[in-house]
Amino acid sequence: MIKYLKLMQSAIILDTAYSIRYWSEILSTIIKVLISYYFWLVVYENRVSVSVYSFKSMITYILIAAILQDYVSGVGTELATKIRDGSIASELTKPYDLLTKLVALDLGKKLSVFVKNTLPIILISYFFLGIDYPHTWTSALSFMVSTFLGVLIGTQIDLIIAVCAFWTINVWGLRIMSLSVLMFFSGSLMPISLFPNWLRSLSSILPFQSMIYIPVSIYTGKIAGNEIAYSIFMQMIWLVFMFLGIRLIWFFALRRVTVYGG
Image (cartoon, rainbow, N blue to C red; front, side, top):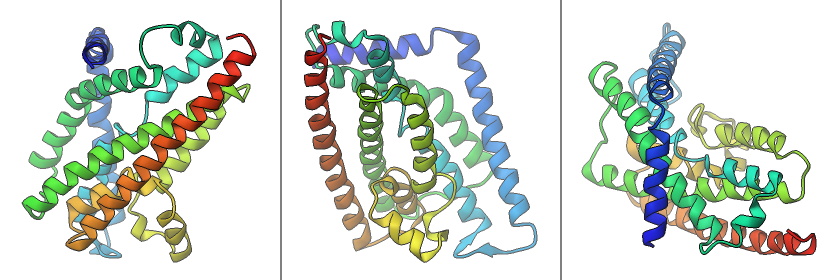
């Protein structure tokens, strides 16, 4: 466990080592927040609400979703790169579990993301854009639990996509396509409750809404009462399913490395 904590620490140091990149990402985060705000301001210019969302509740949803979007992917990029350039072979000989190492590095990067991306969004959103606070302490705590589960689910999905590099010539096209699907069905672009009925039904049987839509809906009070416990339970089910899925795929992938002399 200590070695993975050290890896996490090294990821934080590496991510903050380049000051120009660090501050440019903070600036781009602020610009992204302002663009989202003024886009929805135009949408609501001649209306009071869209479906059940007032302007303030929609802005709250969009900005909280923007925060979570930075946490639900990223770990798969390094794995796919190692598979394509062949360095995966040497990684597998080292005294650690490669998937656990990558998750540890990714968690370290996400801690850095919290400082350079999340904090600016939080400060701007609460002090200047006036978004809502969680309705109750229960919803606030449930939101944090749901967010943690959503981040882990997103990490497992990202790893599954990255492992496909063992069987494809170019995994980057697959990653771009999957990113588009994830952004849409996770509720990152807009609340899933605004989808047509058939699309909303399709989304409900996919794991993607567990990454963003469910945590944000708990925060905004759209999911409340007994629905919170049920939603978190389903997130846990999806997390276990995804974890077992990536381990099974990883098992067959390692057999492929052995066959080809990796």
